[in-house]
Image (cartoon, rainbow, N blue to C red; front, side, top):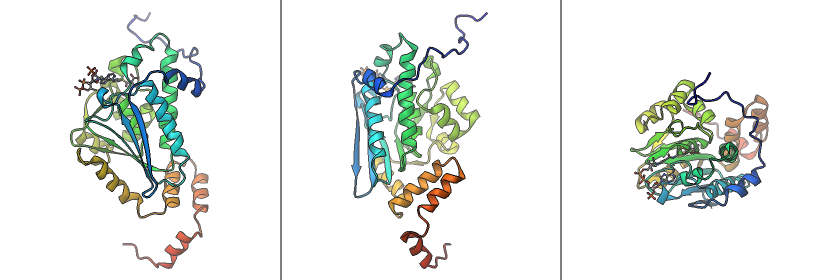
Length: 279
Ligand SMILES: CC[C@H](C(=O)O)C(=O)SCCNC(=O)CCNC(=O)[C@H](O)C(C)(C)COP(=O)(O)OP(=O)(O)OC[C@H]1O[C@@H](n2cnc3c(N)ncnc32)[C@H](O)[C@@H]1OP(=O)(O)O
């Protein structure tokens, strides 16, 4: 017999796959904060800002909807090369807007549906043909630690603190960390982080590969652009997008198809004519 404190055996049959447009209509009424997207056509770099500083950049329902719409807009941006995900204020993101969560606890489907929407957003953000980097300043709590995993890279400030506190809140990860955190730091470490909810400070994040570099808090946007440009500015847009595609590829077939789209093109021919001696 299981005590009431134990988790019941998993029977998720009551959870139904939702239509995401319905989910967006349901969550969109819970307002607070905003998601801002700007695209710089000259540099080919877009900026996606989580802006709810007065509530430590937690995600309202409307922000979940707007985040999904922003990713959809980026999917259509054919001239882009890079994306910087960042937030306003002193802290990256404190996860779900708990005021909204408290209004949605009467039916497990509510959590499931919100998770469906966030999963769609983080997966599609990861799959963008843009090189993406998140700036993680200050604290990144719960779902904040999940959102930051949707980008290709993460730049921390010296005082960043990540904590996967979902278990402490009686739930699990729900915005992609189950898979993305494991991919990043490995099975054991990911499990340790989500079981304990312990603080992961910048030094440890760098050591385990959760952070890819450091930016200064005050100049973080400029620093991140410099960091990103060092990886994409020297390459034509088509090549940046192709390299990203091949990192996402799940088969050799995809890799050789991407190669085929570039083979014998002017960039290839020009490079061959340079007679490079690389190092
Ligand atoms: C899968 C995602 C999962 C989910 O629930 O669906 C999660 O995200 S679980 C994690 C949920 N988030 C939290 O439990 C964060 C709780 N908040 C904190 O731990 C602190 O507020 C912290 C560390 C984020 C910031 O601490 P600090 O001392 O810097 O600021 P304050 O505590 O004074 O916060 C200022 C102001 O913001 C409100 N706040 C902060 N986070 C949230 C939030 N997630 N939801 C709602 N409101 C939030 C805080 O209550 C203060 O409000 P005020 O009206 O000024 O008192």
